[in-house]
Length: 205
Image (cartoon, rainbow, N blue to C red; front, side):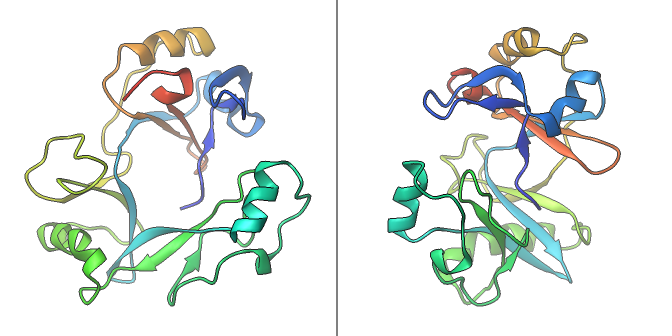
């Protein structure tokens, strides 16, 4: 699961959306794609009969500081911390702007930090679909925004939304202000995705 592009360009100083659409996401404003709720949890993948959790391979501190200061022109693999065993990157190269290099790690029953993944897996093992991505939600994940009693795996794209007919910065901002959710993910027929979050407009969640 590659890092999803935002719908609007984010100002790196204010961390808020600007009225300029990200070129790779402009198809959303043309009315393309299916809008679904963006869940607030931890991304997972069911592949090869097992559950994988999202892992972001990070830059070493000196290089991370240089990137934030705008003094790092290119990113090299040696600038990143060593990846844990089993790490599979989602993309061959890291994001040159943010420094993110997301990937997947296999969930293990022997690892204490994976106990919530394992609890959710036990509940949903017979319903998981090969190649489908999910969101781990529950009491110990992201402050339990959904007030759940047990951990669960919610399929991405599982809750369809109806955004305003007019798709532009102002109408989407007004619509998002009235929503109680983290954000939206649009899915294009060709597999492209774009996201919009409440925090992009400065709204709390």
